[in-house]
Image 1: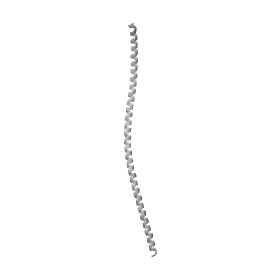
Image 2 (image 1 turned 60 degrees about the horizontal axis):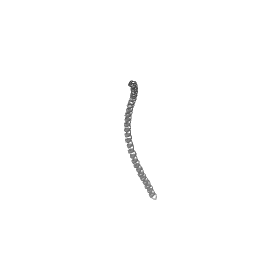
Image 3 (image 1 turned 90 degrees about the vertical axis):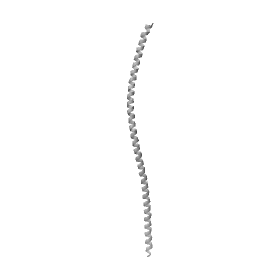
Image 4 (image 1 turned 180 degrees about the horizontal axis):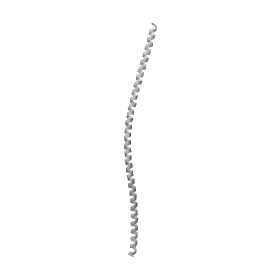
Length: 111
């Protein structure tokens, strides 16, 4: 009989420890689940942001390609205009030389 209260106390102590351990594990599991949900939510948000950045990147690449093609066209046009300017300047010099010659021819005839 003497041993019965002692055994009962030990059993109650072990049961109490197991209950406390179970509650503690349950709380940790709950916290882990909440943390996992937060990380999953953050991961989904990051994936959405990544997809949006990929779309923007593709749009910018397309825009860059368009601008580069426009630059090429403008450079060709610039070189064409430079050749045209050079021809015009040569023509101007030729006309000025002919005009000087005509003025020189007419100057002695006027005297």
